Amino acid sequence: MNKNFVIDNIKDFHLPHVLECGQCFHYARVDMNINEGEYEYDIVAKGRTLHIKEEPDTEGVRLIFYNTEKWEYDSVWKDYFDLDRDYGVIKNEIIESDPRLEEIIYVNNGIRILNQDFFETLISFIISQNKQIPQIKQVVRNLSAELGTKFDVTMIDRLSSEFDAFFPTAEQLYNASEDDIRKSKCGFRAPYIKDAATKVYTGQITEQMLSEMNTQDARELLMTIHGVGEKVANCVLLFGLGRRDAFPVDVWMKRICEYLYYDEVDTPKSIIEADAAKRFGKYAGYAQQYLFMYGQKHKIGIKR
DNA sequence: AACCAGGTCGTGA
DNA sequence: TCACGACATGGT
Image 1: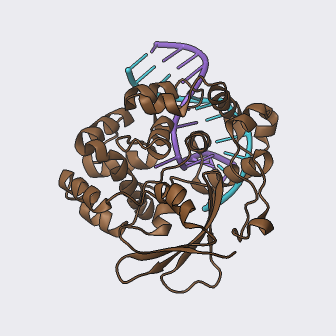
Image 2: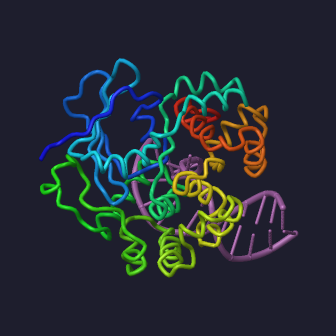
């Protein structure tokens, strides 16, 4: 039964940076009986659950996927964690675009852009507007517990923690009333969630359509959803549709980029996004994530 | 007690 | 186009 899948010597990977850089919300850290250099998490994603641990290895880290078969790693988690990608190349390209990012990348090394489920990413980032990350996680958990398909923790013997349901499908959210959705404490975003679920469930917007469009057209189609603006659309493109050229600009990125590139002068998000596209090109999404972590860690530009 | 949060919408110049 | 308040909820 308890078969673990292990991979050794993974470079450019650090679980806390991967999960806690604000790109995903349906996870929890397991802090019990952990040794130095070890990090353990529970994750609910891709309609599955995962209990995973990182340990130091001779070169890079070792990942232990608890109670996981090889086929499941090959077909699900390898892609989810973006493990086929060579981040050495990506880091070099970014540093070439701006040498000042070398230190920032070094300090925040081990970030991976996850390949998450499209619909979950869409709803999660609709929720994210005007909320802090811990609260986003709470609403995602509430929404799942109330409307998502339950899984039996004792049967699965995998999760040690607080989750008991998958993220709701488009169908489940479409069939829920706005009041039911509001019970998740999503507040004024409830009609937004409903509209997104409706457009996806009725096939007005599909992952297939979006993946066949160029990034700009896909962004515009996403923005026809009520409650999806430029920033949320870019997050969905980057984290849920594999568009690594997308560069979401939120309050943090605005502060960080003004600090780095605009001499602290107030600059429109549209300018910041366009300049980043020019500067980082197809690596803009990766650059954004290193910058976001850096800004959060050092509270760049925050005045209090 | 105001003010802010991985924003977006509606309104009015 | 652009500025600005409103919007639920919770934390400081």
